[in-house]
Image (cartoon, rainbow, N blue to C red; front, side, top):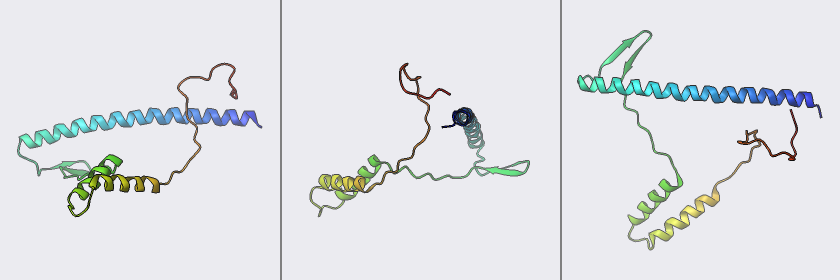
Length: 134
């Protein structure tokens, strides 16, 4: 095995992993700040009864738009929806049992894929463990 090449690849991975983490934190902070300003603009337009205003900025126009967001399809939400459906059909006996059986069927039909990825461990390995120094 070429230890120099391995060490070079590990150093590169660590560098870009750290860079990606740093940039991700900056993105989160920037979005939070943007959202604060957006809320302030929304509130000010609402107070001035200008909800349909078109704001001209260099190179673009801004206007409040309705943004519809569909809730996530979690197992809990799916269970509640299925149970609600079965309860709405009195001709079906035992909606609780039907809900449970359908959910189990859906869970069993899901597929799982496994990928190998490098991950940083929280703590350094204990001395005496097998690891390749880089």
